[in-house]
Structure formats: structure tokens, C-alpha cells
Image 1 (cartoon, rainbow, N blue to C red):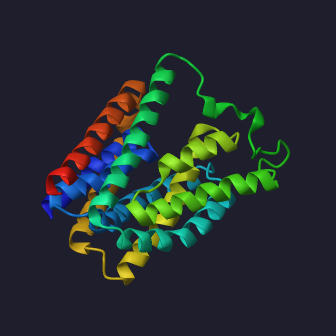
Image 2 (image 1 turned 45 degrees about the horizontal axis):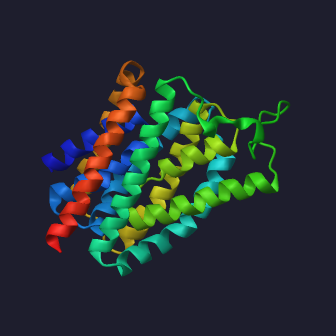
Length: 270
């Protein structure tokens, strides 16, 4: 229980300092600490990530920066795709599933590193070219102009997020945040808050599916989630002082090393 609480504190701190995508590290941490497979670690990770995201989403909603209609669309479709991801995860052998996770982690780490390097050099992020954004806010109402292109872009992001949440136990912030930045003209604080609401809702679907199937270890999951929520709330105060391109690059390097560790572990066990 103490180990689970400590790991939760670490994940919550990472989430606070690096943003929604930082929680992808939760699954490999649980795998290494408890000698679990992806399917064992995924629901516990999602319980913590979803709970932390729900707190962040509530704070964003209270600050009126959550685009709740967009979040509801993405989360609704994501929740439909989540059980499919869970089903596929339990059909795959443990080693290939772990290698898929390592591949996703490597992809996320290199993209985070590249974005942080561009930010550090003062270069614009291509994802922020909002003139061609599919979803634009109306100057009159402050709400999205819902076009077919906008609906399609957000729907696709929701489905991918839900499937990956069920398959790998990831919150999906690394999918939702870039999708919202590329497809909308929302400011970054609204992108993050909306992303957190989607993560919270989709994670709840995946956690419920695992709980009903008896695949969620609450003895580990509850202290892990408590630690994550506590550290995320405390870390918000540190984020304004510590967060930046160098921290993002450091996290990207750590994530890449964890991915390599997952690959080596599978090779040794094979």
C-alpha cells in the first residue's frame, strides 16, 4: 500500500508539471513495481489518471474554460470504443501488448521532445496554426461553430482516445491535446481543461468495464489514485515555477528510457 501511494504521488506530480500526456508513465511504473502485465496495470493506472483528471476538469469547469460540448462528444464516442480496446488487450499475448505500449511511449516521448525544443528556440508549433482550424469559436456567442469538418475531427480523436485507453490504460492526453490544438482555436488553458474532462469521462468507462469484469485491484488502485490526486493538487503550485521546455525535454528522455526498459524486459523474459 505504501509503495502504491508513493508511486501515485510520483504520477500526480508528473501530471501537474508536464500536463495531461504525462500520465502515460503510470502503466510502466506499475508494471516494474509489481511485476504486472499491461492488462493488470492498465485499470489501476486509469483509476488514478481519471480521478486526477476529474479534479483538474472540475477546476477548469469552475473557471469556465471547459468546452463541455466538445468534451461530451469526444468522451461519448471514446466510451463506446473503450470496451473494444479492453477486449483486444485481453486477446493479445502479454509480450506483444507490452511492445505496443513501448512503441506508443517512444512515439509520445519523441513528439514531446521535439515540441519542447521548438518552444525553447522560440519557434511556433505547427499545431498552433489556427487559421485553418476546423472548429472555430464564434465571436458573437463564444461557442464553436459546429461544422461537419469540426464534428469529424473531434469524433476521430475521441474514438482513438477511447480505444487506446481500453487497450493500454493510457488517459489519452497525448492524443486529445494535439487534436484540440490542431482542430480548434482554443487557448491552451482551455485545451488542457477540456482534455482533462475527456480523460476523466473515458477513464471512468474503462475503469467501470474492468471493475465489472473483476480485473481492477482496488488494494493497489485506491492508494495509487489518492497519491496521484494529492500530488497533482500540490504540484499545481510548483508548475508555474518549474514547468517549461527543459522539464518537458527531461520527461521525454525519461519516457524514452522507460520504453527501452520495457522492450528489454520483454526480450529477457522471452
